[in-house]
Length: 293
Figure 1 (cartoon, rainbow, N blue to C red):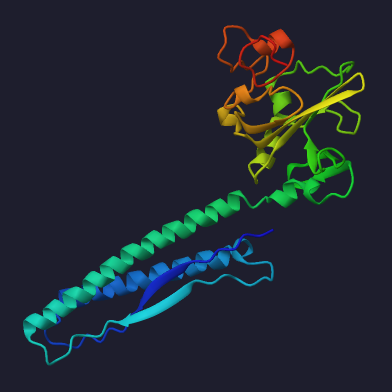
Figure 2 (figure 1 turned 180 degrees about the horizontal axis):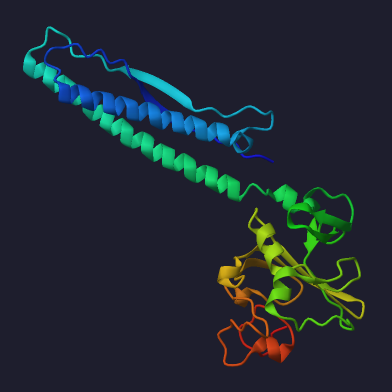
């Protein structure tokens, strides 16, 4: 998916016939300065769009061009005006040029900011999350993250990326360090034990709107908790949990962890006197160490 950018900018049609005898050299210099500034800004904006065509074209390959509205000519004042009226007319035109130059500079900054945001989010939701278009459960490859993931299509209408799977009798230790939780560990698969990784989950959940489902199976009994809002902040914020909108048959075990930071035994980020990750031999979004997992 590519992002389309449409931007409408009012631009004056500059036709400067500076032949009036009362139009002094200083005024002429100012008029030419603003005129040249406008065209230089517009040229830079057009060049910026052309250099980023892959980001600003629609699905048919058509570039979303700037919509230029040429609305005003800046001719020299009419010769039948008095000297004072001619000077006033010149000052009015130059004031309009100054105002327009300011507007164009603001639009140029806005365009640059929008393109920067598009570049940052050029890894799109559909590329990061192939489960959106999967037809059956199984392994998929997250190309831009260079990782495999498991898509669950039979649980709660399907389309789920499984980012943690842990069985009670698992031989895989979850008492691992920050770097391992960041990148992920274990073997991805239907009946395997693994953790997809905090950074991949952060990248995926920040590419669109996501929800979280927790499924618990014990002795043939199943339960689930579902959250309609789910996102992880970046590593600078210790992969802070953003979650809400609970429903399900299990207790709401994560609602009180909203805004909690992730902790491991070597990176203790919860607001508690003990290191809960060491206590529970696992990384998690802890609050206190009592009944955490």
